[in-house]
Image (cartoon, rainbow, N blue to C red):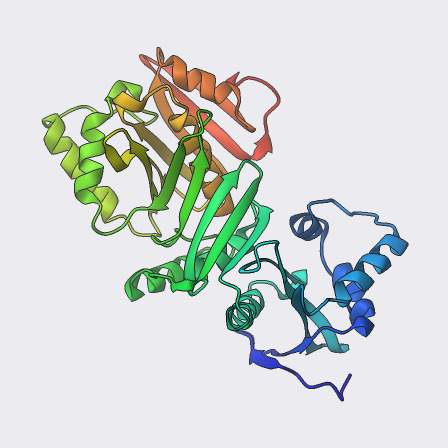
Length: 391
């Protein structure tokens, strides 16, 4: 191994020196070693199968296949580092394989569990993207588990324009190597980093404004969701005036101002919301004669590192199309990926739409009548076992 020439090398956040090599057939053994250092959840997120007790023969055959890459089909790399008691240990792998459309390639990256969150995946993705772009690839795509916080981070921090589409438990990403990302301002990045430090580097911060997630409604309509930006105050205020309070999922407040004044005050507060306080997402759709219209919003405010309070608002004229349900579970999934364990909210007791949406919740939900409203608690770490239960 010492005679091989590294094509790329870097130093991690913990000063670990990593060397990256083009993969060769003899690396099959190293891929097996890397696989053995992936936990059950990591294996599932990478291979979409539990693989808790895999057939050794199957693993070896898969490693041999992955170590033998036709240059016309794609490129693969394997990374090594000197670990305590493990000199020149395989720590990560990356590859891209061209699809039938030759300008598009499917990408995959795996980092052993004990070395995650050190920037290894990000470094490999950037190296892979540069190589792919220099060899005629314009788009990178891939599928990952929606709850995989590491991949959300990779896609968000990629230096290229990215979009994501959530399909329930799985999310598809699409990276355009010809279009640079419009990253958030430096002060937002610093605020995100401070938030991650306060949460022991285990929680995700808000998604960058330029990351767009596409949700598909039952009628085939496309719903484009992105994080709120600094210039969205007017649009949010308009949305809040077009969504009746009694049709929202949020804690009711005593009205002390006119609807317009209340909407502007709330929109200003949400537009200025920092990553440490919560997250706000906006949903856009192409309506007849109204392209790229803001039709809904979803947000949560942190009450503590483990608990949040959420709100979903949908324009009255687009009610009944499934937008509220898509936004609700998008917010819950994102909050869960950010480390939130419990989410609270309220809705009007006669709001049949919310009752129906919650009846299909994949998370355990409890509810408690509070006058004309119903208070709910969604437990993001517990799966549903039927309809919401009474506290």
